[in-house]
Image (tube, rainbow, N blue to C red; front, side, top):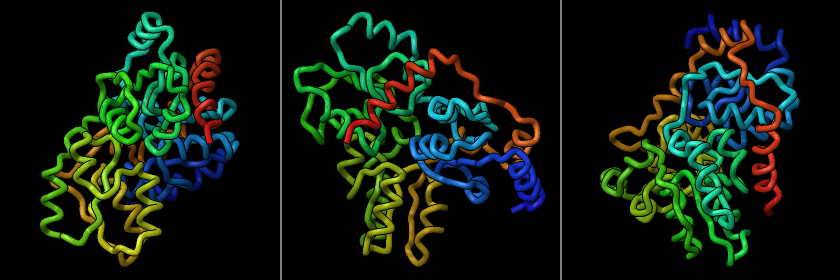
Length: 302
């Protein structure tokens, strides 16, 4: 790693009283300079609880928005505002608003992988880790629309046996993870435990041993007696898995699942963002208040 930007980042961070949060899918060098690495909701909760004057959010744009919603008094800086999420973009706020108008009695459950504008329109959020629990908390006589990820929604339907309408969105990276890709790695490493993300299609989830969020994968591996794992998600998480589990082996898929947007976050962009205090995430107060309600409803479900 080039120590020049690392040293500059450390000095600028101290001067601003900033914390750096990085997603599990960012590049290894970004994870290594972060104060906290996690999934999108873990990072946003960290932002809320840290009460830092300045937060540098290393991930994609909807995640930085969520951090701002939960830490509205902090300055939230997104060093790579061009880093988007194609799945989040598949649920446009105007389309969600129109659906809501046409189906006023339907409960809208939105994956946290949505824009702030969409969160402001829906009833309750969920994560890949708590989606089953959130859906199960909704009265059985209520109709549900789950958005934007039809694969995560389908996996919840299969898990709970509860019918839901599904928005026609998906993660392009996990959409391409197939049972055949899992089988190919199993052939080379027959004793390895196969882990996939629940954003993968149901057939892929059925071919794996466990379907877990990134946070769930980290916890599972740490507590497992197994020492070999097939990792069926974006390859950036393998860096953290290896760091936290010396002696255990991790096998990625081929072709390697890669979120190009996550990799847009670089040390140089983090340095520049800390130096300049921008690009800052700015959202209307009214929109943040409405979006926060959906998140708080999720957090209230135990």
